Image 1 (cartoon, rainbow, N blue to C red):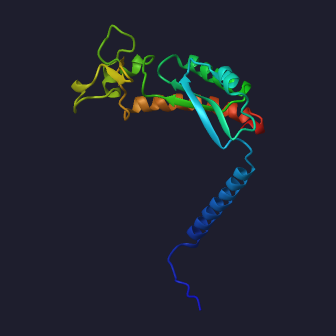
Image 2 (image 1 turned 30 degrees about the vertical axis):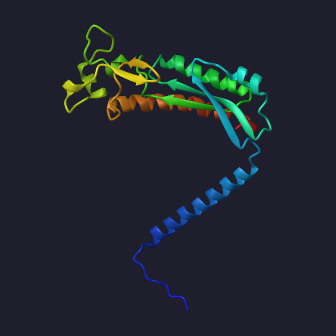
Image 3 (image 1 turned 180 degrees about the horizontal axis):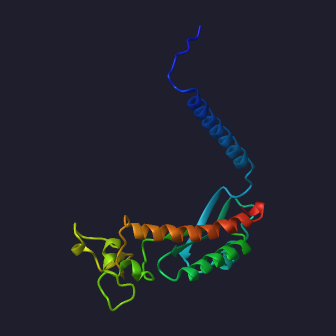
Amino acid sequence: MAHIKATNTPPAKVLKNFAALMFFILGMAALNAKTAAWKGPEQFVLINGIDMEYNWAAIREHFGPMEGKKIAVGGAFIVYCFERDENFLEEEIREHLKQAQENVLPVLVQLDTITFMTARPDLWNWWDESKPGYNPENVSNVEWTGWSPKDAVKIGWLNWGRQIRLHPMPNLASPQYRAESERLLKRYMNVVKEWHDALPADKK
C-alpha cells in the first residue's frame, strides 16, 4: 500500500506549482508540434558583413534560391550601435531586412554596444573641454587601469590583425552607459520584431 507523506506546503503553493508544471508541459508540446511542422532549412550558413555592406542580391545570385533546401545560405550584419547616428543606423537595419526579404534569404542581426563609441563623446569625453561631449563625470563611463578615477583611460584599441585605435572602451557597469545601451537595443530590436511580425507565415 502506498504511503502519502504529510507536508506543510500551503495548498495555494501546491496549486501554483502544479499550474506552472502544466504550462511547461503544454508549452513543450506546442513547441514540439511546431518543430514537427517546420518545413524550412535544417541548417544555415550566414555570410557576415558590416552594416554598410548590402550583399543580399549577390548571395542569392551566387548560391541560387534557398527555398526547399536543407542548408540555406544567408547573410548576417553587425550594427555598432554607438558608432554613428542612431536614426541612420535604424534605416540601415530596415534596408537590410527589406533586401533579405526581397531575396528570400535568412538573416541574422547582430547588435554591438561595446566596440565602437565614435558617435557618443557624451559618454566618454571626460578630459578635453574643447571637444564635443565634454563632461568630467564621464570618467565613470570608461575603463580604468587602477582603482581610482585618475586611472581612467583616454584610448582603447583592437587587435584585428593590426592595431586599431579606438575611443575609450566603456565601463560595462556604468549606469549611464547601461541605460543608453538598453535604450538603443530596445529601439533596434523593436524594428526587427515589427518586421518579423509583418512577414507572411511561410517566411518566418
